[in-house]
Every structure is written in structure tokens, then in C-alpha cells.
Image 1 (cartoon, one colour):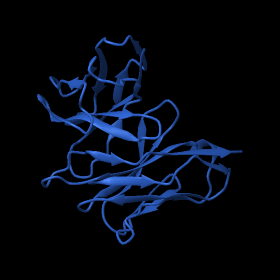
Image 2: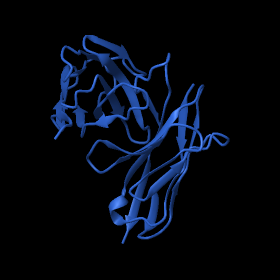
Image 3: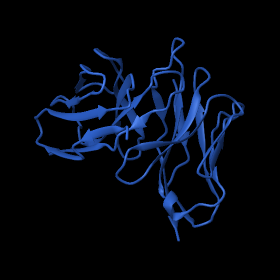
Length: 116
Length: 113
């Protein structure tokens, strides 16, 4: 089946440190890949996405590159801020019968805490 | 502003009672979804609906029911048959087309004692 595996957290960093959150996937086709972020007490927000191999998604200083050869979509940011403290979810979406129903398969989430 | 509204934010019920969680969207999205979030387990799909008057079971539908009588609304009922109903419930919507992202509500935290 389809699955997403994220690096175990929690991750604790100091402000301005470099961030990497690993994400690997298994899928029976060619998925689209997403990173979502969840701030305390809120729902999830789309952070970035990539729809085909070698695509790079980017937003708010975060980047992730779709690597088909390693089935990975690692999230990176060069300099984190306290306001980046949140839970980060990697997810994949597969087309089904030629259309996408928007069904996402999520990783378990990685808690990021950034200290001043 | 367009968005998804879930209510209430916190809900408390006694074991054996059914409870209905509300989800309304004004984004004109065709597709709507219910996810359940438990600590350390990510999100799991309960039910989804692509169009009005149609819905399908997700990965963990047992003990839940939904309806989709209007495009804007997708209420979820947690029945007494759900063995472990205490969780954070998230509603989402999307255009339902290829690669369209999901837009999430702020969730309802249900506690059953």
C-alpha cells in the first residue's frame, strides 16, 4: 500500500539554525507530494507541494525537492525562527482512475520547537 | 473571507451518546473530507465526499456516519459504536481536481468519558 514515513521528533533547534525534516514514501504510482504545517490548536495549512520528479516546492523560506530515485521529499529551511514552531506533516496524493479525489496519505508528523 | 468552519472547538460527551460535528465551507469546493488525528499517528481518513448526495468510506469509517445534503455542509456523526472516539477531528475541502490541495478547518476536539 501507500505510506509516508517521517523522521521521528520532536526536533528542537535554536533560532537561525538549519532545519531538515526527512520524509520518504512508498506508492504504487506517481504521487504528488505535499508538506502541511499545523500550528497549536489549529488545522493544517498547505506549506508547499511538488507534482513530479525533480520539482522543487518552496514557500516562506522552506524548500523540498521531489526525489523519485530515493522516494524522498525532505523539508529544509536555512534559518528557522521561533514562529516556525509547529507540527509538520508530509503527505502524498495519488491519482485514481484518472482523477484525483484529493485523498491524502499522511506521515505521522514531526514536532518542531525553535528556541530564541 | 472564504474558509472552513468547524464547530464547536471543544465537545464533551458521555459514553454511549451519539454526537454530531459540524463542518461548513464557503469555498465552493466540490469535495469534502473528515480526518481523525491522534498523537503520534498522523491523520487518518474517515469519510470523503466528491459531490452532493454521495460519499465514500475512508480508512477508518467504522462507528462514524456522514451526510452531504448540501455542497457547503458535511456533518460527521460519531456513534456509540465507535470504540475510541476521543480525538481531534479535522474537516477539509478541495476542488477535487488533480493535485488540488486540501483546505482544513481548525478542528473539533471531542472528549468522551
